Every structure is written in C-alpha cells, then in structure tokens.
Length: 161
Length: 289
Ligand code: FES
Ligand code: FES
Image 1 (tube, rainbow over the protein chains, first blue to last red):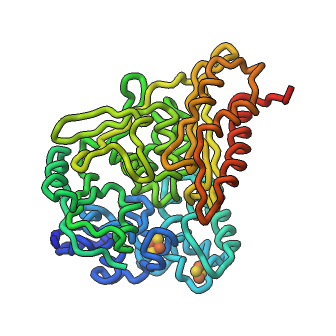
Image 2 (cartoon, rainbow over the protein chains, first blue to last red):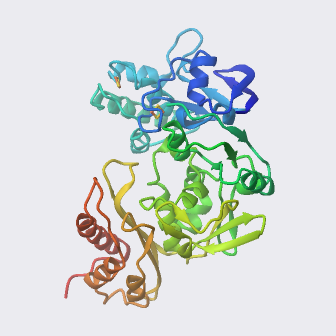
Image 3 (cartoon, helix red, strand yellow):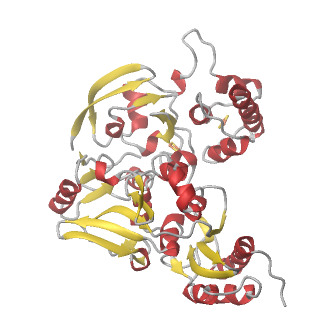
C-alpha cells in the first residue's frame, strides 16, 4: 500500500504530511486535520453530509481520496464563520429560518450553499434547490432549509444588482 | 466502510497510465472522478491492488470545437461540460442531458469519460453519446482508436474497451445550430438514476426533419438506439408526421427489464408517454388525425 506526501490548505491553513493511499478526504479531514464538522452519514455518496468545498466547488469528501486533494484549497464548515465568530450568510440564513434541528446534515448543506453563493455567483432559488437535492435531512422536513435558500437567492441578487 | 489497501499512481501521460494498467495485469482500476468507483471501493465490492488516477493527465482535459463538432476530454467533469459556453452553443441537446447527471456535488467530480466508460444502462451520458452519433477516442499501447458510441456498449457495464485501453475523449459530430434537443426521463428523485429515459436531437429544415438521433436509457442492457423511429422521422414533414407510429417504432427497439424499482411493462408504458411528450415539445403538437 502506497503512502504519499501531500500539501494542501485547509480553512486557510497549510497542511503537509504523508497520507495512506486509501484514506478518504473525509477521514483525513476528521482524523488528521481535526475537522470533525465533516459528517459521515453513508460513506458512499448518497447523503451529502460530508460535502466540503475543494477549489471553490462543493464535493463529497467520502468520494475523494485525500491524496487527490494534494495542492488544493479545502474549506469545511469550520472555515465558514469569520474569526470573530460572525456567521457566514448561509449559516445565518439557516439559523434564522430554522433550517436545522439535530445538525447532522447541516455541514453538508452550508458548504454546498456557500460554494454556490460565493462572491460573483448569482444562482437562482431553483438552482440552489436543485443542488440541495443531493443532501438528505432526516429532521427538518426541508421547509426551513427551503426558506433559507429563498432568502439567500434574494440576497445574492440584491448584491449583484 | 474502508477500501482495501492499494497502491495509488497519478501518471501524467496516457502512455504511462496504459503501462501501469498493463503491469497490474487486471489488478488495477482506473480512477477518474471516482463518483462510482469510490462507493464500490468503500463497500469493498471492488478490491483493486492498484489505482491509476487519470485526472492529472493534461491530454484528457478540456472542451474544444473540433471538426465542426465538440471534443470533450475524458477527465473533464460533468459540470465543466454543463457550464461551458461551447456546449450551449454547439450542442444544446448535450447541455440539456448533462444537467440530469447525478447531483451538483457529484457532477463537480464525476467525469464525462468515466460515465461513458462505465456503461451504466440507466445513465444519461452513454445514451446521449449514442443518440448524437459520438465517437469514443481511446488509447492503448497498440494505438489510438475512434469507436462509434453505437458500437461501444456490449452489456451492462461492459464495453469493447480492452484491459489496458483508456478512454481519452468523446467526439460529438456537428449538429445544425438550430437542432431541437429532445430529453425526458423519469427518476424517483432528481439526481437518481432514471427508471426510464430518452434522449436525442432533431435537426429541422424547411419544415422537415433532416436528421434524427434518438436513444433510450434504462430500456435495455445498454443504451438502445431507436433506429426504426429515427428512420421514420428522417425526412418527415412537420405538418404531417404520426406521433403514435414514431413512439411505437421507438418502443419496438427496446428490451425493457424488470428490477425492484419497476417492471419492464411499466418502463414501456411510461417510456412511450415520455417520448410522445418530448417529441411534441421538440416538433410541436400534432393532433391525431
Ligand atoms: S457520507 Fe459522503 S455522501 Fe454520505
Ligand atoms: S437537521 Fe437533523 S438531519 Fe438535518
């Protein structure tokens, strides 16, 4: 089994070290980088809880090897709020619209929405909802999440106009 | 839920990738976007000794206008294809279909070549390549090949690819700019594999169908070309074509299967309705005479 030296940035900090070839990006982030906000629901691409942002794009970290993230910029749910604790607009919208209950699915939802509403992007409400079709939530019944999405879609349009 | 240990290689050229595959003598798996392979590894349904990651090979990347049509590198992600202005301009029919491949987050990693090479019978991309008359470009130590997509698929997950042969790109032929995309599928949730679907394009000029490309997915062991329907549509006048006959001809080429999601009979019934609706959308309504 091969080991590989990788360098990457995680939530703005550099990380260098050796990883086992078979280690998933999700396990790497949780066990080696301390990002336990990366939640593993299914480990085979169905639930979306493990979603993180790699080079600006939302991806499932259970379906990517750590070694494949070498050279990348990774953002997890931990990396979204400002250092002083001010929530990311996506987190704020979910909070205000009751878009979470137990919070297990939430890291995947915030990372997906954060990537899609990054500065310069103006997704429609429909596009955001379509993207969230890949994220399962067992608690909320999705209505609070939908309201948060509506609020976000409006906000990105206001910023753009 | 952890893969078995394996060795990982990320070659920079197709020659090196093919050599690694040949050396592993069947013990290697090709890793592209990993959106199908990683679940299989995690579930240990696949236990390779060697993983050859082809996503760092520059030759396999990109989307270009080529021979009037569209060339798509095998390691291009599905979302790159979806977002490319070239796709929207040259092949609206392809743009229409890619939107339905998996979910947003899986399209960010999943590749076009990976989907084509896997040959999942219910997947959108293989059927789209077949419908539009694309060619699959490959590399092996014996040379490069261009294989018509219509001759590429043998059975579920089985293609004419040899053990040390790699898909390098997909070449879509030119379609007239004003071709009409045709797409319809039924899936249990957005992003799921289809229970039944149909995809294609119709080129229309002077009130007649000049060229028709049509294929089913999840309606047989491989993507199914609706040849009889293509023949019927070819040259048909928009003012006078027979929707029922086209649907019947299209269904005649299918071999729908039973599984725990749907029976073959159900697929046939729903497939017929989907195609009728998609044709109507593409060609305009035809009242039954
Ligand atoms: S844990 Fe990755 S998609 Fe469920
Ligand atoms: S809040 Fe509990 S799973 Fe979504």
